[in-house]
Image (cartoon, rainbow, N blue to C red):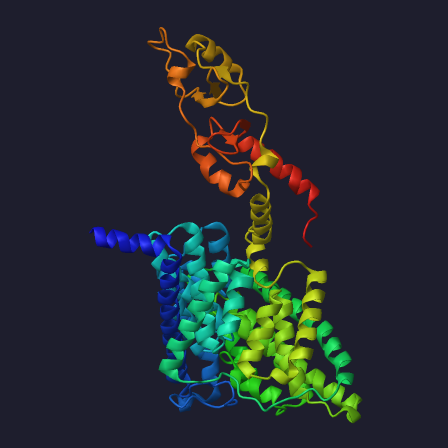
Length: 580
């Protein structure tokens, strides 16, 4: 047993143990991504007879030829009848696109995600996508990997700050293994899930992301989601066009987020039946969209690839862009389970390629490549929707390997993010949480402020110390009028000896006893300690507050309790400009 305890202590309490946890979570996330991928392919094949139906056109299922293309009307209904009760009964948090649920678990719940979420999310999202749901794989795999990391951490009883890191490791591993994008997985986890960059977080998230990628590649091989021809930047005169695309993409990304929740609100307003039945009934509407535009079936990477490669006319590109917005919003609105990351890339790819064709017609002498604008549009629209510019640049670069367009890509992403920020501070993920009354941005600002403030900025002048010889009767009278539920006690030579607390003062049998006899040590705070760290100690001393000293032999500098912390926070908050 002692060996087990030592191993447990090493895992949960040492830097090398954290590396070990990152390796385990990364391997689990990699395997989870592979299983999830095969689930989607298997269910899609079971329903349509193809691994991916989106590029097949309006044709019959190979398994149900008698129905012709009308099976598209029925597939979402049947899928909803299966995953609707599953989600409603076992894990309601598996509904929707998943990433906001992970964000709030990190920001509010110490990284705690129920273990059942991984299993339910895998099956529900695979059923939703496989039966026609026009959503992506990234949201589910982020939630699956994060739930895995959280479950392992909770089982091992790791501290909250490490549990949050394990959640981020799972998210990064899921993105890395799903998209073969280990660098983008790291920054997705840091930018969107943790919403913070530290050396410790970066190191362990990188380890997990690389591990997940290696595991997934060992199983499925080096399989890229999108295969595109090489594009290049013709000349510097093209940059203004990419800048215009970035500005337009900022509006498109913001608009996609608003349409998503506008349709969800409309579905909430109209639906009056039981929640478990909502995906099936709403599936009729989704089936109607698929019947009209079968390219919206599932994730749609083959259609995205064909669009960027220039196989569709400009008008049809715009139809696909608008159709994806509608189909994805409807899938989420009826209670479907899937991500909005891939739909954002799809919308951006169609919008960017259409813009590229228009620019080519207007400026024939520039020898423009519309597909290059499609690549840039993918990243720019996702950046505008998510407010995650670093992840947006890296995910498109790693998905396509197109380094030749990195400069216009970065410029367009920066402009798109800026435009979206100017229109609204909320993104496609935080907007869902705000609708529930949860503001993780406010939480992040509050935590950052409490971490920045120190004990010295919040402490008050210490209570006048009482001599060690003061009798208990006098102590009781002074404690009754004191601000804090404790009084410091000093020796004859003026040294701080400890404190007398109201809770610990027993007046029975007080004959002959003095303050020196009942003085007890309280935990001491250093003036340079952050209020975030001080609050952890103050939790157990709400009634007394705590003394502030520069060292064990130093003088008494001040006293601090929760009221002082709140006052300092209020002063600092009122003088700190709000983040737009």
